[in-house]
Image (cartoon, rainbow, N blue to C red; front, side, top):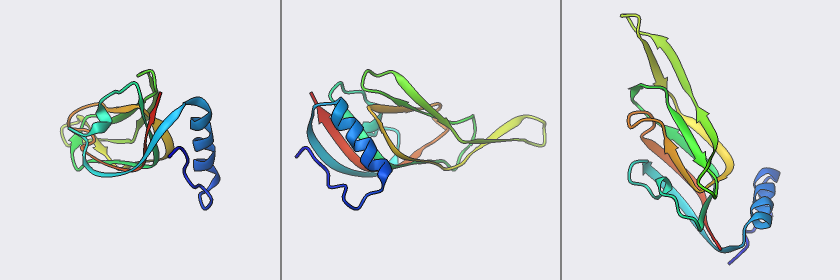
Length: 134
């Protein structure tokens, strides 16, 4: 299967899909829904023939501490987007702490992702497709 039915989708996912089809020779499309820990997930590992088409990508944490970044990598394993959603505040001792609030990303693609620190974002939700290309 090399197509997805976008008849009822909005213009953003349709344009994104057309871009990916024009840029890559897609050989397999697998619908994928994941909700759970980032650590140990398949999204952290680079594969030269794999892409993810993310219609919805959420990151969250109940932890405080470091600034939290989410980095997305392209098909050549180069970072091409970096997201940060950190709210800084001063604790009673005058040190800066960060609240790592929920980060929502829609309609994007990547080959793998990385988070800035082990205690930054610990949870993710992915709704989209795993694409295999040659």
